Length: 180
DNA sequence: TAAGTGATCTCT
DNA sequence: GAGATCACTTAA
Image (cartoon, rainbow, N blue to C red; front, top):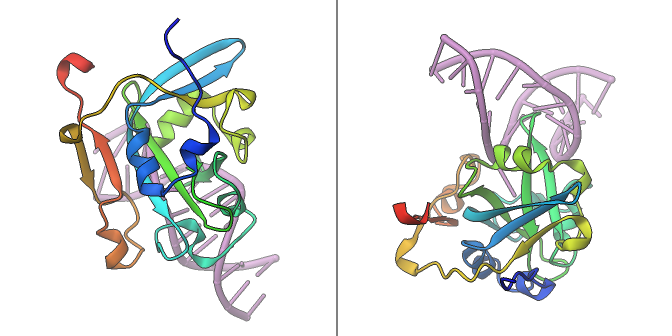
């Protein structure tokens, strides 16, 4: 047996940028009908707190983003553009709204396609990140070297102020061809 | 490059 | 209740 182990809540109970960076190379796991799908996380974005104008929570708590204000280690899933589900992992302490958007994996790129491939939707919103919800993250044993991590501004948030649009909160794991 | 799509938020 | 907006994808 490989050391497959679901990441504990403590993993998400840290500064958002640390969690974001550390999620690269981890394994996103989805269990449906006794089948477990595993995909290596390749692209993530941080949405860090009420002052981050790109974060849904920067205008305060609403019915939709409420889960981000709760404890870490939960999923925040919402529908965007009427057809795409976005998958986020809630980080940080209670009352500090922050999350990491999972934008892509080695096997699937694009946040909307990722959730479609894994059959994620409304049912996973607010669920616990763990085997009990059928959607969790595992340690992979792979260490992503700093040199392989590219940091860029986030995608699709042009409405946020310039200060936030420019923040390099997007992390991409640049795979070598032999890793594919 | 533009349209599709519908929940959600911010006004009336 | 109405209108604008949106952390995207796909087909041209």
